Length: 369
Ligand code: IPM
Ligand code: MG
Image (cartoon, rainbow, N blue to C red; front, side, top):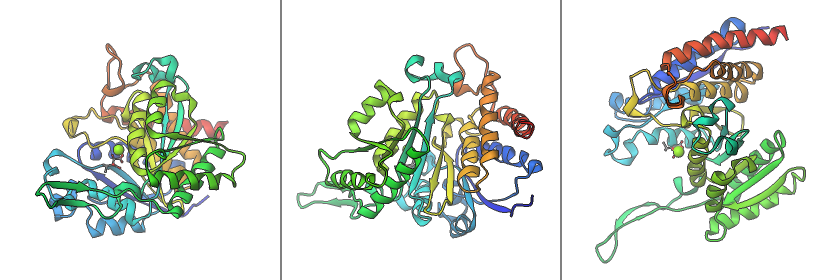
């Protein structure tokens, strides 16, 4: 079986980005002898790219991302760049990639591993079995709406303003992603908005309701975002798939991640209309722990699994990685962020070693099965 070689753009970025992406690459490479054919090409992004070229998203990096079949992304940001003009800040790199590549559908699964239920900030009996897929629209909303800016008004006071904006077509396509995903799961879709206050949200609710006519097998509910934030803490297991806008999704996905025990565990996929995607852990660059071999690489390793599933169509290899991660957790291996008081923890590289060993075993099992 000789599948065509797939090209992966590797953009490690800032802070812990390089360390965690390195471990994900080791895991992917461990699958090569089993038939995974990938070529990886690395490029600078974020503050690291700014230091090299004065631009957080250099043209060469964007071109590489455009030409690749998929993008593996680490993280961007750091205090040393926080005072730069907005268009030079590291965050513009990820926002620019999302927009330029049309990566409108952000999939953020928040799944609890039973081994880590004790690490959740909620009681284990509340989170045990939690499996929520948050689908966040990623290229519209107040993140990109115009006009936006800072100005001084007539009375000499400074003002800041941003525009929340959604076109019907943008809502319709993300709603479809939500319904399709729900169909493959428990067929329950909760659309989150703020339709009691915002016009944008009223349109959102109307359009999602229209799309529902094509998915009568999926149970649709609507929830205001403030209530959704509360319900996630009250009873996270009530949710199957949540679909929401860019801003609300940003906030709710961080909240949901913590329920699973650690933001260091959660991967994400940002997809265009054709299955091309950018894959990144949902956590940030954690500059305070960068370079110390203590960051948790599992969110990035799980992002690599999503890459295999959604952009390369390699479901079996994706499952091998996910099974390997479960295996190392079952073995009791923990990085510091997911270790309980009194448990010993291992470093970033050692966690990578463990997953590499487990993934080869997991892939082998599949062949025997
Ligand atoms: C995320 C991050 C980004 C966002 C930042 C880094 C621009 O918080 O991916 O959730 O707000 O989308
Ligand atoms: Mg965020």
